[in-house]
Image (cartoon, rainbow, N blue to C red; front, side, top):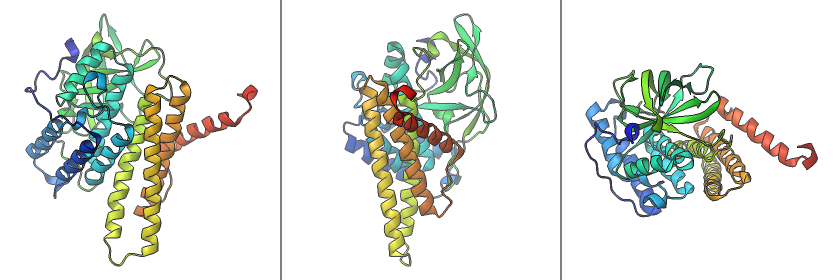
Length: 358
């Protein structure tokens, strides 16, 4: 498949086969411990690359591959738990896994049969997908494609998943045919892609910085474009999954902070109990959102997708509030969450109006 040929500059790799959901959770916990080795902010580049190679070989990238493509297609509740476990020990690992799973969902939901066959078989062998988002401050939410016959040229700047240079493919948002928003799937080390930083060493003790990437006249063949049927739904399953896995990473950070509080012998028991209860409620909301997204992946009705979005938005809100309470910081929602809550509120208001008013 030309552009989608699997990592021609990387030696053949063999990944382990994860056969059960329980095994996936165990592997995620083990890898979290490895990525959280002391001195994470100062590890040599070769050590960071060795961890990423171990991650690829672990089989964890393949757990969301559909069964018809040879995967075990774990539930989204388990996918969230995997990301939460990873993020509790290493924010970088949590982001890497979440971006990969969301990108894989884009292929699952909108990729052609040929794209799905190519990408999913590579994922089962250890391939990783990273995601790009348009550079902050740009007016568009995606790149515009410059047509070149049966191919396109791409230029601009973006922010990507941590350590994107070590991924195999990069999922890039683009506008096709003037207005339609879709994605290109590009080799992460293709010609014209320039990663500004020279290291993928994560920041110590905090969320990893987004990786700044320059696109300089990047060539993309026709089979790199994911051809969506019409304009994607504003409540697409991939979007809900992204919200869910953001909630999962926040949940993981909350668990880590709560553990430190519980380890403090001088801590107040009432406070510990209250914060534990809030985090348990957040965990339940995350699990419920995972089940709603499971239903949306197989349900044909638009209401399934709406329900999944509402559940994921609620889970993210509750996990943000719980994590803020544990950290002792103000519970003001981030700007992007405020926009999501406004959208969620509008949907709920519409559902309450008489049918003739909607």
